[in-house]
Amino acid sequence: MNLNQVTLPVDNMALCTHFYRLLGFLQIVDTPHYARFECPNGATFSLSLSDCEQPNGATIYFEHEQLDEWVTQLQHKGITFTELPQDKRYLWREAKLQDPSGNKIILYWAGENRLNPPWRVEKRA
Image 1: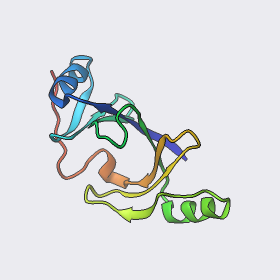
Image 2: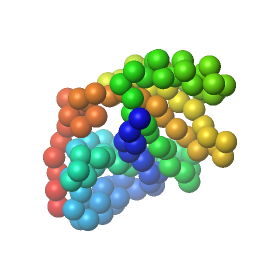
Image 3: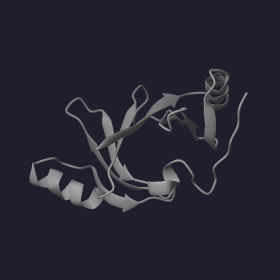
Image 4: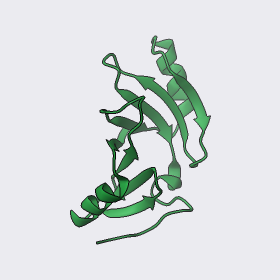
């Protein structure tokens, strides 16, 4: 498995996207509620407007090409999921769970759409 990204909650998307572009990151997704940045090595991190479900936490993503098989293996080990694998509107397939402390974890497969979704933008400071 590979660690893909961490999503940070923010309360002002415009201010935060500007800040991260100033730090030198390339913004590759730009919506009112979500932004993603590419690091020089190809890793990404993202920002998401805070919601009442998770006002002060991060979401960690782990990518695996055989997502459905991986989820089945984890279920056999007693892991409980809050959402089984589903195709999402942003072209990723995801399953959701929480760690024992309540941190949100998303297991997913995005393939080429992780770095090059149809709506990709390239903004710099």
